[in-house]
Image (cartoon, rainbow, N blue to C red; front, side, top):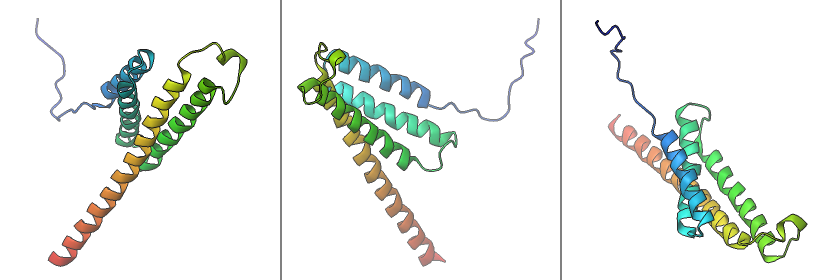
Length: 141
């Protein structure tokens, strides 16, 4: 029996984003559950960056910066809420029995700050590189 499967002639590329999204979720969950805050922060930043990259690559969003900054803001708000619940600043009866909320809130909020600041820094760098490229084009043209 011969192999009758079709072989494409074009070069197919696979996106790394789904794997990175999964790794980001795993690292963030492990870091939060086991109280390894640097692992949790890195996992959340990886998750946000991967989802943003995935959606940008698939042309679901035109520019990645607003989405990445939105992830950062959402993480800061969620982290602040968990911190307030954990320290007793905000009291909700079902959350009173939970432990470690403040520590988890700090990790999530830190990931939000890093994500938002990183997105802004990369946007500024991208804009500067574009401007330098257009200046070079003007000099050669």
